[in-house]
Image (cartoon, rainbow, N blue to C red; front, side, top):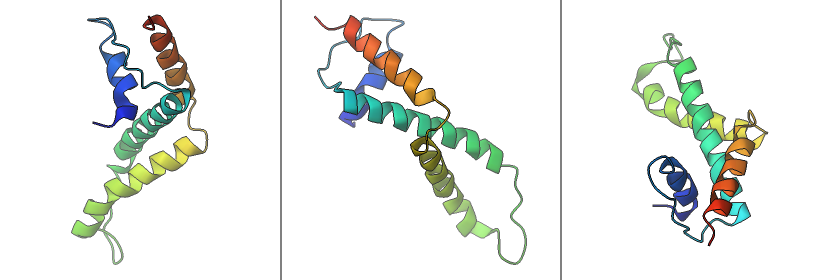
Length: 105
């Protein structure tokens, strides 16, 4: 498991248990994890949008497009998040920092 994802994993467990302080929550790692979370969120949203698009025709469709469409949508999500996204990464980053501060001994 990627250590950069530990703060997000800890965040999901706050409803049931105290979050352990992993000591791996540097501000840059938290910002990177928050941006990655936003990219995945955007990719999931775009994936639903592209699911209804037909790809028939002389230059589209087939198994190749089915295989690579997910990769294209994932890259779209990363590009949108890198360009500023929807502001979700900022909210996630602030929440992760607040959780880390609460659990610092």
